[in-house]
Amino acid sequence: MSPLPRRAIIAVTSATAPLHNGNPTGLFISEALHPFQDFKAAGFEVDLVSEKGTYVPDWLSQTPDFLHGDDKKQWEDLSGEFRQKLDNMPAVNTIDGSKYGIFYASAGHAALIDYPHAKGLQKIATDVWVQGGVVSAVCHGEAIFPGVIDPETGKSIIAGKTITGFTTQGEYDMHIMEPIRSWGEPLIDEWAEKLGAKYVRADGVWDDFHIVDGRVVTGMNPQSAHSTAKAALEVFEKL
Image (cartoon, rainbow, N blue to C red; front, top):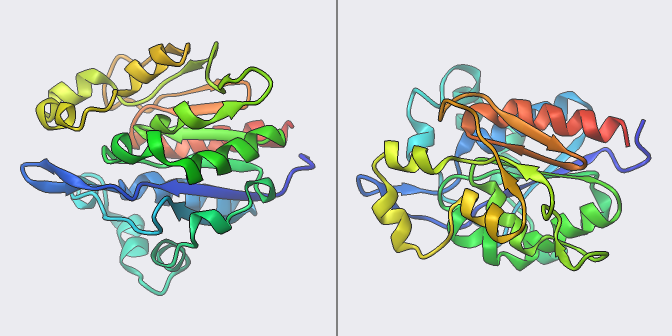
């Protein structure tokens, strides 16, 4: 069993922008809810945090294809633990990353906007990394990595590693590339190249797919949120 704290912290995007025919992008609900469920089931204490202490739910993530059954009930239960933690997130500068064994960056397209510049979230992830913990991200959450720096190398912790994340093909398939490009931020495969990482993907845009490379665990899309969290737990238990 790992000597690190059995605590996980899930990062949430504070950004929002019109995307889905004018509907907002923001937090993709299942990408935070699914790891929350998995970490809780493993006996972890779980917290959620965003750079500004706020979030806007992604419109697409609330549609029946992505939110249904028990997940929908948990999202709509305003007095439940998930919503209580999400709706009352602490200030990012009050979080001590050394108290957590796992960092997990949830996403939504909006993460492309704020994660590369989210100094508070990046510091938490870096603190988890430096003490030997697991740093994980899903979908567009990998946009956090530009500021998660290994002090021994002075480079991003993904330099020289293999990661995955949402595909550029997926942006085209969803017919949203034009508004995304207007944000002026790199896509996930572009961040990988900039940071010296190798980007890989599954054949299908919506396939459940994740990659483990040492203590870095990344997932490709919302369908991969569970498997990414479970893989992060497996790595943690071997530390």
